[in-house]
Amino acid sequence: SAVISQKPSRDICQRGTSLTIQCQVDSQVTMMFWYRQQPGQSLTLIATANQGSEATYESGFVIDKFPISRPNLTFSTLTVSNLSPEDSSIYLCSASKGDGTYEQYFGPGTRLTVT
Amino acid sequence: GQQVMQIPQYQHVQEGEDFTTYCNSSTTLSNIQWYKQRPGGHPVFLIQLVKSGEVKKQKRLTFQFGEAKKNSSLHITATQTTDVGTYFCAGKGGGSQGNLIFGKGTKLSVKP
Image (cartoon, rainbow over all chains, first blue to last red; front, side, top):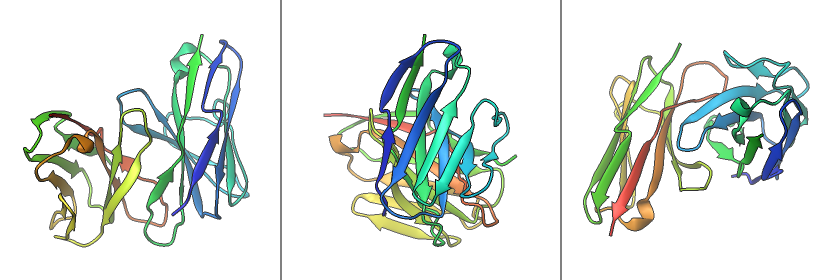
């Protein structure tokens, strides 16, 4: 298994600013992912964070709005840029060892409120 | 694109009753996974099914993967209040990418 921590756990940000969320895994993992989850809703995949290369974004998500870094096999960041109230959500980081099981381990999430 | 549909959206049961949630994919899946998210918590992996027709059990939970690998179910026998939460299925298509498509989830409430 893998233990994942996220910082910050929650934040309140003003419109037009940016928030960077950090995700740390306690062991090396092959794949890391970023999701968005509205309260009471399902998980929507934003992007796959690729180590050493640009992230792979899902339809409807772009790099300018959600820049992602993954400098090594245990760490990734997601920035939500030019915040608007519609960005208020829970952002979850997950990781998979990629050993054929594709089981994903999730971080505790970051609750973002944009005022 | 690939879609994973899950029903019902909500289920309210009396403690001791059984519960089932169903998952259907628009395309054949290489595997399907089930996750549980407690209120205020994050999704936690329960199980992965890979083989056509596979059935796996975890105590009171029974997971099935359809013969065509396009549908799955989770059945809980004799629910307890600790079963409360949202159960998500997540399907993986073919290829080496690890990304999953999550269903909308079934929110289970258990009345003691």
